Structures are given as C-alpha cells and as structure tokens.
Length: 352
Image (cartoon, rainbow, N blue to C red; front, side, top):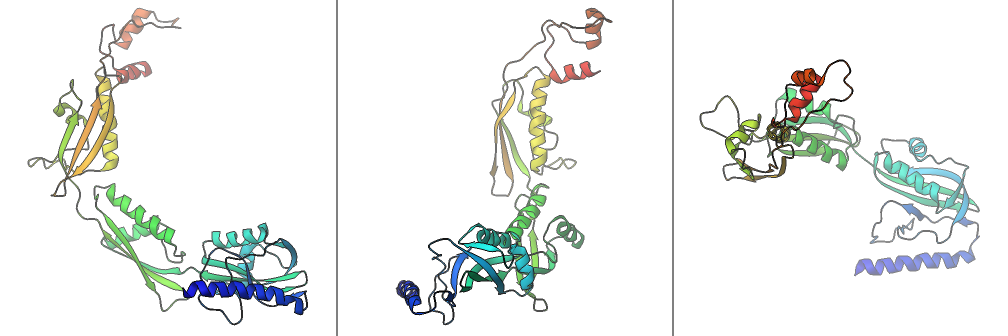
C-alpha cells in the first residue's frame, strides 16, 4: 500500500513540476528526468535532488543539441570510455525519445561490461540537452580455481572456455561454462556429473571476484540390460555383436567395459542399420531408443527396429562400356542376379 501511495505522489509531483514551469523561465529545466532506460524500478521514497520516473518518458519527440555527457556509477571505466562505447557525440542533434538514444543504451548493454544502464536528462537549456548515464559495472574474474579433478585437467578445462582471469563475470558465462564442462564428462560416460561455480568478492581487486569451479563427476554409468524390440530376422545376440562400443555388463568380461558413452552409442546405432543393409534389408531403421535407470545407478537401453523386407539383386546392366564387355564387368563386379542385396559391397566393388 505504501508503494502505491508513493507512486501516486510521484506522478502528482511530476504534473506539479510541469504546471509550475509556467512560473519559471521556459528554456531551463534543472530537475532530473528519465528519458530512457533498460530497467524499471519501483521507487519507495522521493529523492531530494532528482526525480526518477522510469516508467514515464517524454510524451512527444523533441530535437535537441547534445550539450554534454556525464556518467555515474563507473569505477573501472572512465566517463570518456563509456561515452565512446555509446557512440554519442557532444554537439550532435538528438531526438528525445529517439533511435540514437535507444541505440546508445543497447551498445552499452551489448558491450557486456554492465549489468544495468539508465540514461537521464540532467539539464535542458533551451534546445540543448545534457545527459547522464547511470551504470552498474560487471565484476571481473580475478582468479579461477578448479576442484574435483587433477590440477592439469582443471587448467586444461579453463583454457578451453572463456571463463578466465580478466573476463567479465556474467550469468551467461557461468551457465555456458557449467554446461560445457558437464558435457565433457558426460561424453566420457559420467552421466551424472555435477558442476557448480561459486564466486566471492576479491578484496584486493577493484570490483573483482574470485571463482571456484567444483566438479563432481561421480562414477561411469554401466549398462545392465541391452534389449531389442521388433527384430525377427536378427537375434538379440547378433544385434548386440553389431554394437562395437556399447556393451551390456557381464561379470566375466573385463576386456570390454560396459560404460555408456552417448557419442559412441549414436555411432553404434548407425552400425546396427548398416549390418541390416549388408544382409539385404535396405530399408532397415531404428524407430526409437530409450534409457531407463536402475536403483544401482546402472541403465537399461531399449532399441526398437523396423527390419523391413529383404532385397536381392536383379538383372545387372552396364551402360557406356566400350572397352570391356558386360560379361567381363559382371565377373569383375562379383555379383549375380539372385544374390542378397548389399549396398555397401556394391559401392566398394564399383569404386574398385
């Protein structure tokens, strides 16, 4: 209720200032008014020196000459640097509100140096306007430490990402770094890898933060059951053999691990289809596959196939052969009418 009353008072004060302007020189306004902003904030109190009405812009477009630019809230960057980032030039004509001002705010935002940008009209003198940018700078990363893996592995991961000393600390950088590191370990069979990134203020640096990356990769996930559905021509045993890298867990098999690696699994599904096609099932395909978890942290893989019909070679004709006869080419090809269709073998024979 307090906020509602305050906002009503603010609007009233704004109107009062506009109406009382008739009693003062019309070409000078010294109060501070928001003309554009990237954020909207509720105001609980009335400031003594400036009126911040982030939800109210000038009601009509006015053209001014930009008389000056000042900056508030900057620590790492100078006023001049921020002015250069905005691409606004003192002395240029500018419409309020208008594209140039909107573009200036977007450029500051897109520089990825600030977490908040506001711009105010600090003074209007006739047709000359003075702008004040209020910014909140992003923190820089002063140091990165990695826990949960060997030191050399941690250093390698940091080199592979943008999460380095000197980088601006953004939510997007934190998220992309966590996802990248997690995928690196998931691809190696650690499906339940957890990555956290914590930051704290570095008291020795100017607006800097230290970062700690904690990696809990857990154990590699093993395959308890490998089940096939829809296969009638090929047995489960035959299909399991076609999967080179994806193996079911067996107590006595120590030379081939049963760990699940998604990249290798995808390749094995392609090999499965190729095996069918080599035996004449040209239209064979994997309809769907799914993963389910067991209480002992192992998984089950269920693969559904559509074998399709079996094809055979019919008459083989050669076109454009002027040096060798059809008979010689047929002998060279090594395929005859009635043979089981094998697209892979056919391509190999044609390419020689």
